[in-house]
Every structure is written in structure tokens, then in C-alpha cells.
Image 1 (cartoon, rainbow, N blue to C red):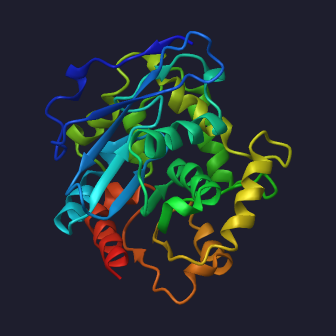
Image 2: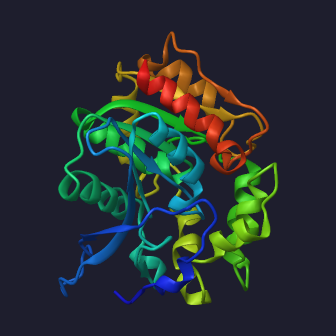
Length: 304
């Protein structure tokens, strides 16, 4: 497995993102070399506070959660915000075959449970952060006390993906030069400042470093016989029995996953009887459009 590691100087002077990264070593699956991958994460807030595990999606990194983290830390929450392998400050495998749904679930599990020993966790998952996080919740329910699903879902390949998702996947796969910051901006309704767009481009200074963002859309189950379909069906069985608090906090302007909000609220027992926030003027990347609003909703949910 060949790996790219983004130089540290790419991450200087990022707007509103002053936390120093920490690193864990996670295994390279099916690699006999034994040399681990470096997985970066932010650990912010009181060490004895309630824990929120903030998982980002495609094609972002933990920078996406900066306003959410600031709001949660003010409320006394300890925030763990990893960079998925292939993203942010984490190592970036250079072959698409190095990436699979199962591997990404395992890498996050290894960081959260083996390295950080997290328990009594509130999951906050958006986009791929939900696809990975909801699998972890279903497979390790004893580790979690609450769930916040934010503009995400858990596809099994048994239903058709929306047309806009197919257009996004095609654009990512066919782009000769993948402009990550521009794709992030397309998922927002409030636009991005130049310095913010640059922060999303920062982890990917050369084209070969972008294998993770290029690979992730193809890993979403879209046929019933997808390699991840059976595991996701099994996860749904567990989620339809999940009675701990489950909040669906969705933006009001997300054409990609917006239809999942009523499904989650209906099918997950722990979602019953809760007031599920709809974040105003927020697109698919609601953390960028309305991070403080989302942070306040999560803080209230955790306090309750």
C-alpha cells in the first residue's frame, strides 16, 4: 500500500481552526508490511466531559466541524473529530482498491475504541460520517448513549439513489482535476469565503493525493449485491430496535439526503417523541452553512 502524507505546512493559518492535531496508528488491512497508517483527529474540550464523536463525510475533513466544536466545547463537551483515512491530515492510500466501506468502518472503530477507549459516546455523523457511524452504533451499541444523524443515511442498495447523487459521483470520477473546495462549496447554500475554500483544498496539494475523495462515491451501496449491502441491512435491523435517544438534525436545503430525515424519525424507536431540528438555510454541508446552530442543537440534545 503506497501512501501520501500531506506536509504539515499546508495546515497553517486555517480560519477558526486553532486546535492541534493528535495522531493514532491504525492497521493497514491485508498488508503484510505491518507499518501502520497515521490517522489524525482533534480532541477538544474538557477531558472529563461527555464525549461527542464527530464524523465528517465526502470530500471534507475535521475542519468542517470547527464551529460545531467551538459551540460544544463552550457547553462542556469533549469533542473527538477524526480525519478519515484519505482525508485531512490523515494518511492517504494511493490506490482506489485500498479503500472499502468495511475498511473505513474498521479504521474509525480502531481509533475510537482501541486507541481512545471511548465509551458513553454521542455519535454525530454527516454524509459518510453517518454511513460509517451508524454501522458502528449498530455493531457496538454498548459504546453509544445517543445518536445525531445529520444529513445522512444508511443505504443498502435496495432503493435507488437520487439523480443528483449520480451526477455528483460522475463529476467526481470524471474530473481531470478534482477541485475539492469547489465541490464543498456546491454543497453549501451560503457560499464560501476564499480562505475557507482553500482550507478544504489544503489536504490535497497534488492530484495523486485525492484518491480518497475520488473513491468514496463508488463505495456507497447502490445495488442489492454491493459488498457492503448485507452489513448495512444487518445494521438496519439493530437500528430499528435502538431505543436510546436518536436525533435527526437535517438542513432545510439538502437535495442529497433530505429524504432520509422522515425515514429515520419513523423507523428508529429512539427518535420517537423528540423535537427534531430543521436547520434553516443549510445545505448538505450544514456544519459549514450553520455550524453554530447545529452545535447548539447537539448541546441541547446532550444536556437533555
